[in-house]
Amino acid sequence: GGILWKVAAVAKNVKVSQGKNTLSLMKMMRIEAGVVFGGKTIAQHGKSGLGQDVFLMIRRHKTTIFTDAKESTTVYELKRIVEGILKRTPEDQRLYKDDQILEDSKTLGDCGFTNQTARPQAPATVGLAFRINDEMFEQLHIEAFSSPPELPDVMKPQDSGSTANEQAVQ
Image (tube, rainbow, N blue to C red):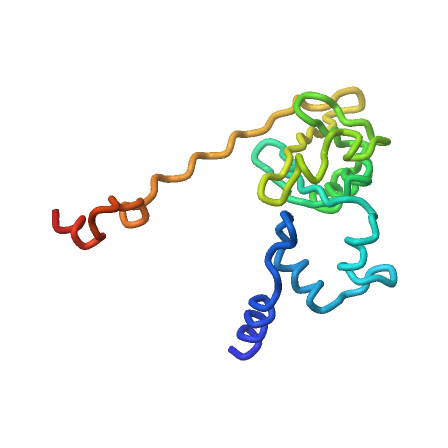
């Protein structure tokens, strides 16, 4: 149990949010450890103006990929991220914003994905369709998310004039 306790202690001491941006536990722990990328820590990268983070949900049928990228990332580079997960080449992918096909050479920022429109707590949706043969791609199709179940009674807000015990007796 010692290792688990230490990780919890490290996570507990890290700031959970920075301004309006929520950071993932992984990023928080990397910042805490001062991990270096390209000679700079992550914290220094954030200050150097290398582009703002955008948070995306890439969706196809019942599949949803949550990822983050920079506004300066190209659509083609985003397809490479998808390739690493779903094992389909960028040439066999078509990405969409709403019903518009995204051009490989454009940046996510050019396509309207910004740190204001694609936030950690409200990621932007990118549609994904695959090539079905040499000439055609499948129709863009995204399954709707299911509705969450109703809250159990014990989790519902109580009347301000009575306690949970009084509610149970009535």
